[in-house]
Image 1 (cartoon, rainbow, N blue to C red):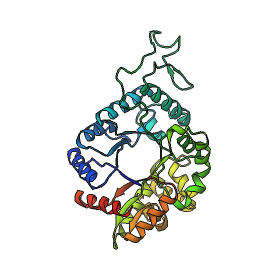
Image 2 (image 1 turned 120 degrees about the vertical axis):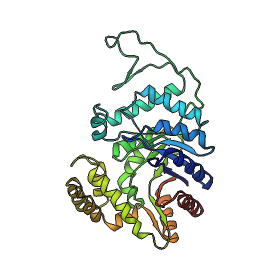
Image 3 (image 1 turned 30 degrees about the horizontal axis):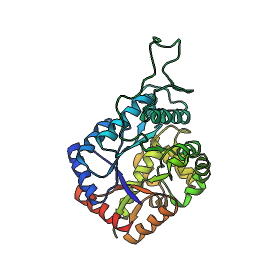
Image 4 (image 1 turned 90 degrees about the vertical axis):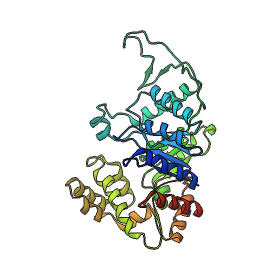
Length: 345
């Protein structure tokens, strides 16, 4: 089982990059750089490529609406080049509040667009002359659109790899089925091992039935918070605040993927109350409503024996990488935490 984590560079990126280099030596396998509506992820990934030697670098995630498919392919090929074949293209649809509210483009057909974008990327990486007539993307532009001067082109450079790994962040059944069919990796959020088969098993099986064997086995990246020790349970308060943010604040009522997931986990009434409080501006109260069991079960927070048991549960549920959120005060403490986790795998 591999270890990954997302990079928090709000306090200064040179410091964050130095920490990543130390984490690499401690046993970290994958470093993710988020994007959301912050700084772009690509700049940071390029910097990290120059500061690391072994670990894989992943976008976590590039939003599929914010770049053309060809630019996404070019960007992935460029990052794979500067990292000497260590890049993973993490893609996701994000949500309408960000896509329409920040980027000003319609949030439509995420499943169809994802499939077409991945197909286009792989054609670009194979250096095929790019001709694609899909439902959502037409390359070159058809007659009657634009100037009429567009012509099929192929990537000038030769990519390091003609198949860069694609990782899809997905929660809904159709999105998960698509990930299992076309992607090298799948990244769910708030993965609860004991409920995974009931919620996603059918979608995963359906996608894998159509999967090209050349893609290999599907990698599954879970994202638990991490703290190991006999007195770390109070840190579950941070987990509850994070869950409240997503369950309560990431989307409007009826359009919140994380609220729907908590409901599927059996916490529907609590999810309703969390959302009600959070949208009313009562964030602390919303966090207090998050069930202790939910915060504990989606995390690796507790004594070493408990964490080891939870790792076994993740492995049994098909997880191949733990994309952890280490809860530690200093860079040195985070490095030590990754070392301890590596010793438990």
